[in-house]
Length: 219
Image 1 (cartoon, rainbow, N blue to C red):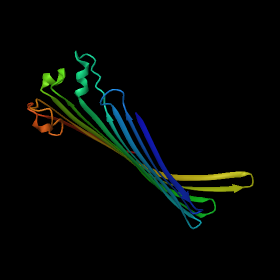
Image 2 (cartoon, one colour):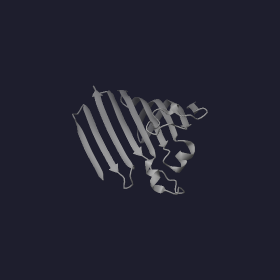
Image 3 (cartoon, rainbow, N blue to C red):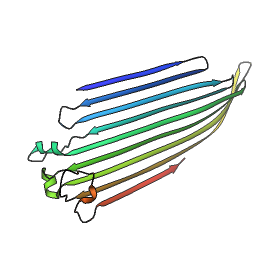
Image 4 (cartoon, rainbow, N blue to C red):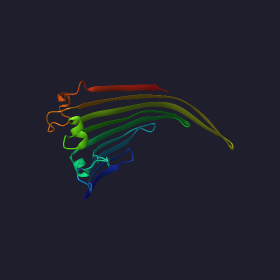
């Protein structure tokens, strides 16, 4: 079963234009516990200020939720895989703004600032009713990853036409920065299956494993 809904609104004048939209998508898979849900929102706005200045901003936000299908084909009872809970949640934000300034004919300055980030989180629990879960007393796993990308650009351009010749002078500066981080937690030997990963610390394994990693780069 699939359902999709769209809503958009746009308009403006000679000085400004805007666009707002919202999309909702939902799909129920053929296999049990296999669903996908997505919500996306967009916003664009441009504004002229006098005859020489123009500013604008655009943004997009997306959120996904997915119920994953286990793919272990070697279990003697494939139907037991449907008792595994495995979900992934993903979100992404994109924002960009700009400023244009034309003080003289042929001379233009432009600056822009942008951000692009995403966050992924996966939660999984394998109950003791499955072969793998029974061998490990139940298994809970939580993992997450986060990306951040920042970009700043500024440039100037001068155009000049003399007779049949065109001259263009362009100069600018760009700075970009990335950040990445992630972590994971795993535990086994649970007394009850009902808590799933929500109480991952209650597992009786010797010690839950926590792995963290990250990085950044500048250009």
